Length: 133
Image 1 (cartoon, one colour):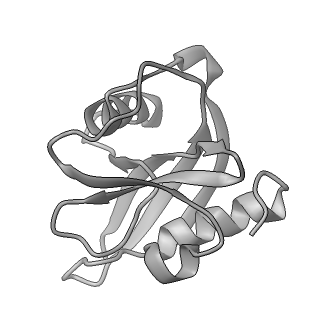
Image 2: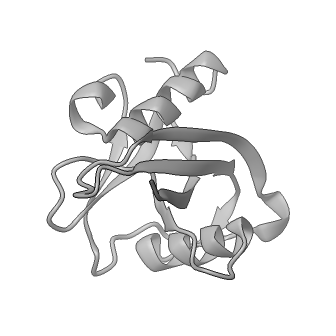
């Protein structure tokens, strides 16, 4: 079975994590996306976050956090997603682009509104004292 390889930006402020909901989806995701063929995870992270949120990540500040494997939400083939998660500083103003329906700072309600991989990322942050849930 194919594995969907992706990257995600873990950004926490005021005990909430930044999440996005793309158009046509019912769950929130950690900002990021699929790694294109021939692209490394850093390049994918920089590209995806700029495309989704209009901000520029500081490449020198990117730190690997964890890699999560979970059932891919809304994948008709029933594949798993492998999500490489990173911390990073950014510049610019966070805003929705054309593919993002909603930006939300998510806290304790994460289990009801987030996709499975996002839930695991939030649990990782809680276990490592980056967020309280």
